[in-house]
Length: 256
Ligand SMILES: [Cu+2]
Image (cartoon, rainbow, N blue to C red):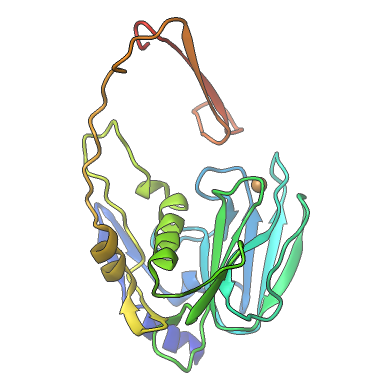
C-alpha cells in the first residue's frame, strides 16, 4: 500500500539526453524496508545502493523503521558518520571508527539523513525516511548538521548541501571543462516536504542556484612556470586499472 503512495509522490520521469530515468517502486525500494549501502572506492558511488534513482546510486527512499546496512570491502577504510539528520531524530548522531565490514542502524524519524565518511568528506549516501501518510517526500522541517547547528529544511544552507549531494554522487553532474558544454545539473524530479510545505526539488534548486552554467574556457597559466607539476587524485578511474587513483605529471613550460 505504501509503495503506491510513494510512487504517486514521485512525479518524475526525467528524460536526459538519450537516457530515460524513471523513478519506480522497483528501484526505490530495496529488500523490503531495508537500505543496503556498500562503501566503495568508486568515484561518485562511495555509498552504493546498487541501483540508480535518476542516475544516482547513493540515495534511497524508505519508510519509518527502515534498517540501513553498511558493508564495505574497499581498498581503504571508511567511517559511517551522520552528516545531516532530522533534528531530534532517534538514534542520531551516528558515527563509527574507520573500518571495513558491516554495521547497521534503524531510522524511525521521518526526514532526510545524509551519511559521509569523516576521512573522505566527499563521500555521501542519503536515505529519505518518508511518512507515507503525508504528501511529498519528507525531508523534515528542521535539519541538524554534523557541526551542531540546526537549520530549517528550506534554508539556503540546507538546499546548498542538497545540491552538493546531487553533484558529488552523480558523475554526470560533474563539471567537464573539456566538453565546451554548459554545466548542467540533473536532480531527481520529486516533490519534497520541507518546513514551508511541499515544493518541487529541481524547481527550487534551479531557481536558487541556476542551471546550465557557463564554465570558464581552458587557458594556459598567466605566469609561466618551470619544472614539473604533479597532480594526485585519490579516486579517479583509468582504463586498464582496477583500482582508482592517479598521478599526472605535466612539464610546466609546455603544459604537456
Ligand atoms: Cu572514507
